[in-house]
Image (cartoon, rainbow, N blue to C red):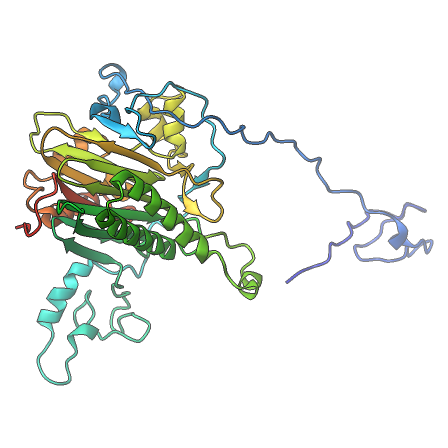
Length: 445
């Protein structure tokens, strides 16, 4: 409820100096009109602040941190560890450190409670609950609580016996499409899954196989981040599946897919004026995006934000590599030479993203790169819900199963489990694609 500002109480009458009581309009001794006396100002002088740094030329690839002294982690493997080209067809080269300037920064870490008291257990227990349900026409296994396995679920999705919220459709998702598979899980601390993915496979005009995966991470500080990630992943997947069979170069197709994803997210902000009147402080839906396209001899990646792609060779004696560079505050600090990678990612601002899809994004700058690995391996496409627990390429290589190329779905499950075992503080989404893309008809074990 709005309130008018109240006048500060006077300690004594300004005419006769007799004490007055709060709320008195006239002095009881001399009758002086106290309402004409101006109250002392309580305002504080405004503090001037400096504005954001001017936009620069962009962030170059950060140089690898030298291994060894000071307890720093081993050097990260960067995209230059594999032969490849950037969006302009030029060979990928490590960029020179520059000033960390970005048109905007978005913090994707709103304050959250330590625990959600009505958090549902692992949705995979639902199958066990259904099996344990009593037989008979009155029994409805789909309505049995996955937590206590005794209470029934009401129309709001809560158990009438123990009060647990039941798993929603997006709490845990798995999909396999030919040689590529993906798994997404809500995690252990979030109240909903704001990630989304699309996987698929098709053929090129010459009949060659091609597999693809798109992973999107909703920006938690934005409005309806789950809708943004779903719209973006679907739009990008549709473009790739339509463009690749027509003969569009995979790198061009990836660029077009990211642009289409951005347009899909922008469209979510086009709400009726009446909706904005009821929620004037809501911001635009937003998400990050990362994708990979794998053919018989080419690997293409594209991204905006801080989700990543890792290359893990089948021969673990050869080094793995991270193929993307985060659009984040931490990455800019490292690129500018202002902080080491360990220092930057230990800072509370590390996950502030400087690039995202959404109507309030300053400028859309899709990053794409193409690579031609000289040996077989797997491509891991994931959100930070996974790479927070396997950040370097070496750490990711250690947790990827040795048979990932022939069992992508199993491997994606293992990687999600690794994140959940590590704490599951965020939504976790991962897609696994074998390289080279196997011929059509080859199925995973």
